[in-house]
Image 1: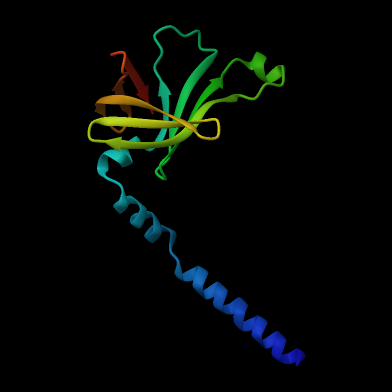
Image 2: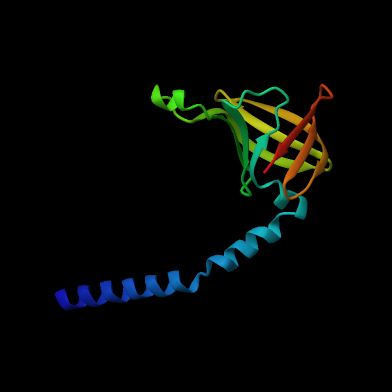
Length: 144
């Protein structure tokens, strides 16, 4: 009986290893990319807000993931913050994003049942620069 249990466990582990080895990460990535349009693939990445007036002590970073989620963070660059024990990355908001024709929609999670969607008109997007127009007609520029 003990030998049978050991044999079953060996078969299980060998099967698991074979299955895991048969899954190729590059194949999975190709499948993920096929589900997204070219424009949506361009949005994915870490974008730094270009600020008109900045002393360099902090940056705003928009991290857009291919999975449809985003995070908006303040990045504290001044070493005084680290010395004071303050985390370099300070979250502002997070939620889900999507592209709807020529608009970028960022839906933030505010409270349990209170999502809020910010809508931005896409003026232009390239591999390293994104220009958006807010509802108040303000130009917002991000760079990678």
